[in-house]
Image (cartoon, rainbow, N blue to C red; front, side, top):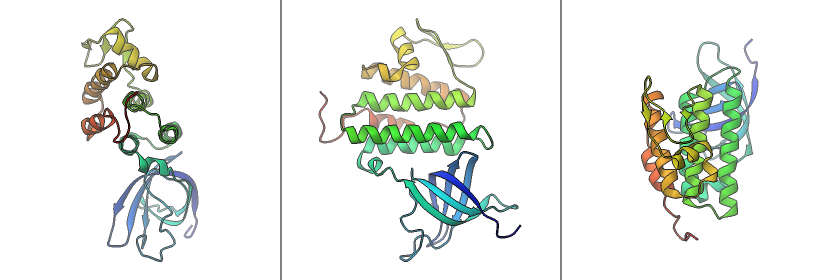
Length: 237
């Protein structure tokens, strides 16, 4: 029926200019990805000004469009703004990576709920690390590995990892040989405190993604370089 609305809790994945003053906003909800048109969003007196941004969790009310995947939005109220992400370059870069994977790979329907929960948890974990102010490159690389491995698990493509080395990664029976230390980092990223080992693990997962998840490596190398360096003004202890 015309005029009926739907409500959802949604994480902002992407904001795309639609016209001089309007946006198309891509969201992740517990039911899947959702694209909404927000007309006049950039006008100085717009009701929506400041109500959404990348990585915000918002409560949205929209008009479902039966003939299009682009829906008109009626209301948008921020629930969690995650301002901490804008004060740390590694956290911001990782947030972009996590949202990008969800935008590209998340499904619709019942399976979307775990993607929503995983992204929400990962973004909140980044914010917590920024608030604590003690995150090292090891912590940031571990965050990347953790989310990428979780994404593979949600896709049903989790690699089989042998503790004493060897990662089932490529087609058929082929393996990427890895050391026991790297294998451990792949099973428990946050337990590993040696940065070269974590970076080796990240490279292995990059190769795995290249073979198993199409187009999922865009910008990853640059992000990995960014998060593996100490932040300006901070010294490694």
